[in-house]
Length: 125
Image (cartoon, rainbow, N blue to C red; front, top):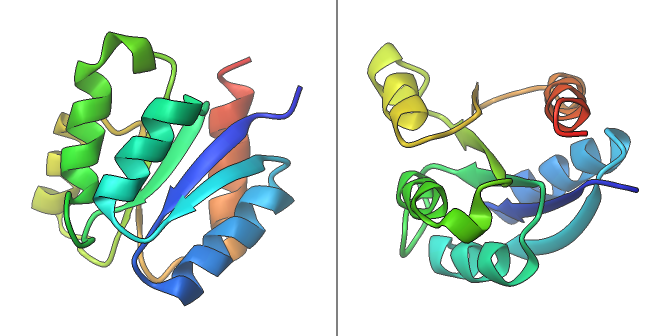
């Protein structure tokens, strides 16, 4: 069975790059969102194995969505990967405290993202 993923980023180009990496990693992209509110709705509705969230989005931030996902027992199996241009130690620590399984700094290579995604979905089976 193919693992499912929800992608959320307010930048259409970044979202496309993440989609390409996810497909390359063998994932089924079940929803894409341009803001945190849409992302949370999609995650609650579809309960994917993985959610890839931009930290800085309109509405709810990726950190807020991550916290809400972690607080919802119905979403226990959802892993969250945060993506952000903020690559400093404090930002990464905040992402991990919010419950992210991983934190990837922008800009990133599609190959690196595909590799990380493969590692995460490989660990969920």
